[in-house]
Length: 91
Picture 1 (cartoon, rainbow, N blue to C red):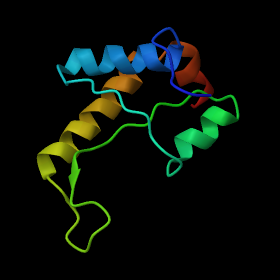
Picture 2 (picture 1 turned 90 degrees about the vertical axis):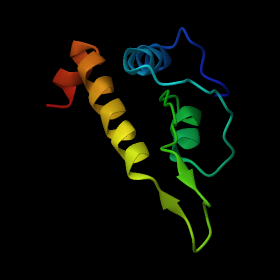
Picture 3 (picture 1 turned 135 degrees about the vertical axis):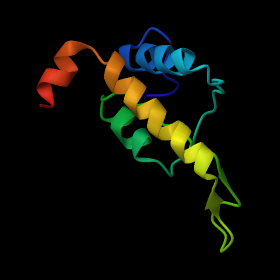
Picture 4 (picture 1 turned 180 degrees about the vertical axis):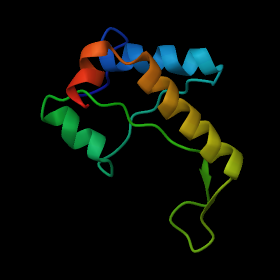
């Protein structure tokens, strides 16, 4: 599966959650280094998102605490907006 269209439920959920928080949405196609690619190939639509790291894959790699907090807020917003059947299945 290539790019995930906005009509895919997982992408619609992601867009809604990002917009609710006022975060910018920057779309990029990732290479082979993510489990999301494997899930998508297996027919399980998955959106991969970044948490604002810097100097990745170096001995100086770091994540700013503010960016980590934004990622946590996004995960909470995703759960709050997830369709009821998804929440029930995972309880």
